[in-house]
Image (cartoon, rainbow, N blue to C red; front, side):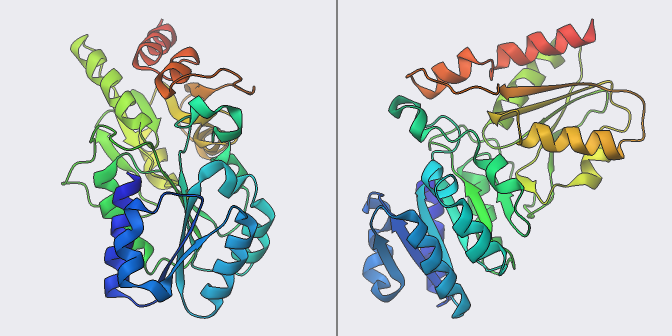
Length: 307
């Protein structure tokens, strides 16, 4: 997914001279072609991420469209004030691309686990937050970033993730995608967890239990109209995310349902990381497995709520 994003930025740069790339503490392998073709628009900075945001803000105020790529934890935790003050207060068209969203970098420990990045940024006005499902969806997203008026945070998965996105689904920032039709039981997910949600829905369908799946690639602005329409007759709603249940997609849906849902009562459950620090070292799959962000736990939770 990261390689696809960087290749797309290079393609955008060939079409629009406003595009600038800024990297920090990343391998140059996937951006070599950009650096060679556009040396005056390519900047590889050191490990001082707050500086990147200020630099990008200055470039944006000068008419450029900066794309920043570095590790998600350092881009969001470390740069909160700069993102809020330098970018979002001025509503500048800077694109923040966070590598290793979720527990991709779990083998490196808690300092590199980005499971509160969405929550950190969701409270900031003007920010747009996007978590694509796979590399194919990334390809459809990137052209829309060129003229989007607000700052954008794009959350990257590890790469090599299963392809879920259908070529029949047009991509639009802020518009959720229905993966499977269904209105009695609805799974609402984001990023690569949409693939997990679909796997669980397919298994339940084989058991005669129909489940709708909605992929919310844009967490902010949230597609409230589509979500409320989809869950209008729902009995059960599950949210699934590779993020803490505090402040992420599940929180956004909780707020929406509590304030705006006019239908009957819903059984609602958030599947994600609990409100604790994950201290274990292990692979992405091992950490997600321990905390129940799995097909098996979605099936178990759904059947418990049914009965």
